[in-house]
Image 1 (spheres, rainbow, N blue to C red):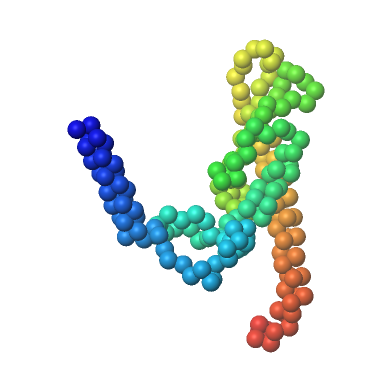
Image 2: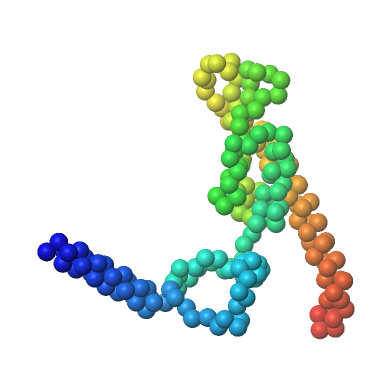
Length: 192
């Protein structure tokens, strides 16, 4: 009787596994591919997928354009990191659009500041970035209240916007130079 129950359990498990696999196949998760068009070398496939902006995709879930804005191509992010490079960072999350520094003091142990930069847009605009500067003036061993320093946050915001504009101008000049090298400006169809 025990052998029969064990055999019955194995057959049931096998049947459920096969049913599950057939169901997955019918849902469209498995997609037939042409082996002649896909390289057998995994590194080449990864490189090709990265160049095409592909990502892991489960089923026919739509969304996303396949193009990514990396931190090195975002002028606001680069400018913020450069301006705040003198302070140790507690957290920097490009995907979440936030930078938080540790408490920092310059010589005076009784006063320190903590800066939080939140990105509301990738565009270089004054309303595309929000900066909060928290300051506290007390001894390190005592827990004391923090206050907002709006003047310092405005100075940091202005410095970040200026630096981001410089980065953007350099990017535009570089792209224009590449177009000149390819002769895009000599094309008669592009002239007015």
